[in-house]
Amino acid sequence: YSARSNKTLPPLWTSFALPFTQFDPNSSSSFNWVDETPVDLDFGEWGSLTAKVGNDTFFKDFQHAGANMDFYLGIEYRGLQWAELIQDGFIACGPTHEGSTSGLLFKTLWDAGRLSEPVISFNCDYTVDGYLTDSGEVRFGGTDTTAYDPQTVVSFPQNQSSPFNAYWVSDCRDMKVNGVSITGSYEALLDTGAGTIKGDPAKIQALVAAITLDGALPISPDNPDNYNYPDLVIEMGTFDADGSEASFALTPREYFQYIEAEVGIGTWYLGLEELDGFDGGINIGAIFFNSYYSMWEYDTSTSNLQGNAVKVAQKIGSKKRISRILKSKKTSD
Image 1 (spheres, rainbow, N blue to C red):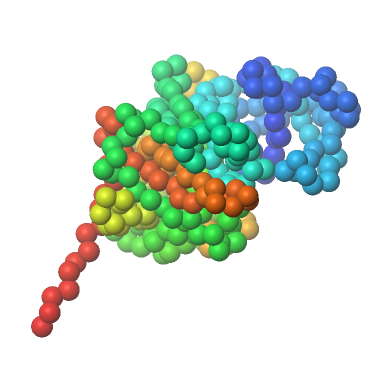
Image 2 (tube, rainbow, N blue to C red):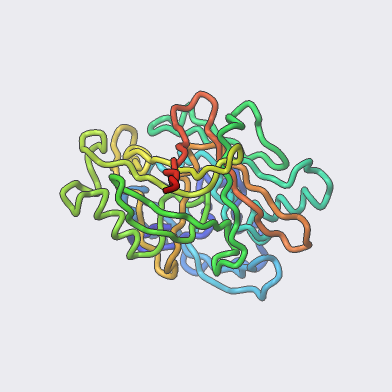
C-alpha cells in the first residue's frame, strides 16, 4: 500500500513473494487475465513494479460472499525495500479476530491443543541497512524468556467497547514532544504490520508540526542525525511489577523511516501518516514495536476470539528503556 499514491496491491506474485506462495494464478480455477500487457507502477521510495492485471473471486473471513475484483500481479520489482522486509506482513499481530492470518493460526493451534499459553510473542531485531544480519521471530503459545527483562513488562489492557475493537486497541494517555501534550488521550490501535504511525488527520498534523518545529525542520532529511529533532514520547500502559504508569521515548532515527531505492541510495521520511476514518484513533505500528519485545494475549473464555492485553518489555541487551512516570504526592495541610 502506498499512502502517497493511494494505491493498493493485494498479495503479489513476485520473486520475493513466491516462497510464501501468496498467490499462484495457475492454482485458481476462477482466475482470468484481464490484460497481460505489462504496466509499470511507481511506489516512490518503495521502488517500482512491473505488473499484469488479473481477475479472481476473493472471500472475506472465509465466510462472506465472494467479491470479484481486478488486481495487479507483479512480474518484476525494482528496489530493495520489499526484499528486506523482516517478517511476512500477513502474519503480523494487528486484527484480533480469526479472519486475520495471525488470529486464524492461533485459534487453529489453540483449538487443537497445541499451545500451552494463549499468547503470540513478537520480536524483531531491525537496523537500517542491516537486512543481512537482522532477524525476527513470531512465536505462538509462549515467549522467549531469555529475550526480555520480566521486571520491565508493561500491559496495555484492551478496550472491548471501542469501535475499533476488531483490532488490538488500548487507551493512550498522550503523545508529547518536548514535554508538551500534542494529541491528548486517544484510542491506540496496536499493529506490528503497520509500518508507520498513522490515524486521525488532526492529531497527525499536530505531531508533524511539533516534530518539525512548525516546518523549520524537513520531513524528508538527508539524515535525521544531522538535525535537532525532538524525541516523540508515548504515554500509555502500566508496569506489571508495581502498577506505575509507563512512557516510551522514540528517537528521531526510530520514528523516521529509511527506504532504499538501491544499495546505498535511499530516502529518509517522517513515519507519520494521516488516515481517514480513524477519528480519535491512531495506529501505532512497527516503528514502536520493533524496539521492544511484545506479547499478545488472547481471551479464550468464549468461542469468539478476542484480545485480552498486549504487553511489551525491554529486550535483553537493548539500550531502549521504558520509563516510569513519577506522580507528585499530595501533602496534607
